[in-house]
Image 1: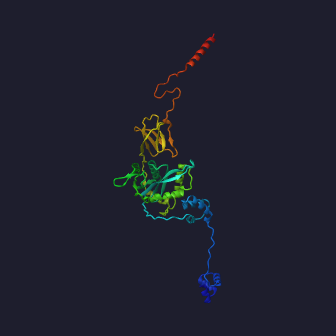
Image 2: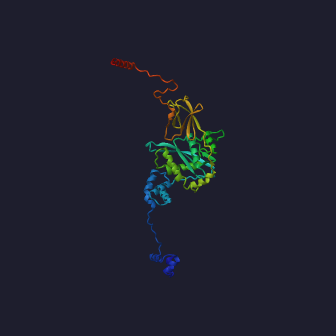
Image 3: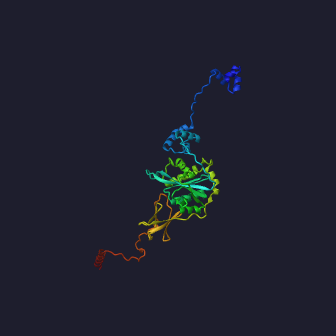
Length: 406
């Protein structure tokens, strides 16, 4: 076009005006001739992310599952001031995404449903190095707002299930109309004559107390409760990987802080809303906590050992010396373990910390009587018997004293 206009006799200024180009550009193109201009590759400009490429590569090689959000926070603490997208673009070249399977999502109205499940984790505590431990994460998520709560436990037994439900309802400030489970044995104990699930009676009793009912997802279809399944991989990548924990209490303390500062304040990828903001809208729809706390105990029978201890939930609890029965009832309440003999309370212990293994009440053990004290259930003891040598020595001293006197 520039050469065409020049052949028509137009001046450089007029060509620049008609083409919208600078006059220097017009002169340069006329000097280069009518050929097509060739453009070479631009010189790469330095990027902010380049200074952290080695760190990101090392972290991904050590822990391939680390999330982009987690790594973005880590390098931001090291001084990175760039954006999150630059981090994900760089990670995509280091860790390509695999094939994705699309699923049909089901959204629930506020207060309608929550989902609960356990996931298996392996971790090593710094208090006991060199011994990887198996721990179980109980997690409950509100279906509408995606508010998340969880606690790591040593076992996934009924005792842990009931305590975690109480903790979740208290943290949420209420309960949903229904709670969805898979076929875990602590929730579903079998199948009824009609083919429907049979739920654990103790769990049903706890849910009924809070105005909720249990629901079970279809067998072999864990994706029907994906709202609680998907966060497990998020927790592994963004929280668990690459951290160290002193013990189980420290693990739960760090996890609670991560929930408050990361998981429950993030913008959720599906809802497009900040989780805490969506939860504020859902909270009025939750069933309020009952005025009377749940107090129905978990009751089991246990044998008393020869040293007067009862084993329950991985812990040992003492009973008084006067306990005569070999078998007693153990009732677990919200904050206390009670031991019943013949319908009467004989011992009560506070729930121990996860690291405690033995709870001994000093009042349960009788101390030996001091000198002069009466024996239990018997007459006061008479003078102690002394050996004959003692009386011989006393007689000899008396005889010597008599001869010495005038």
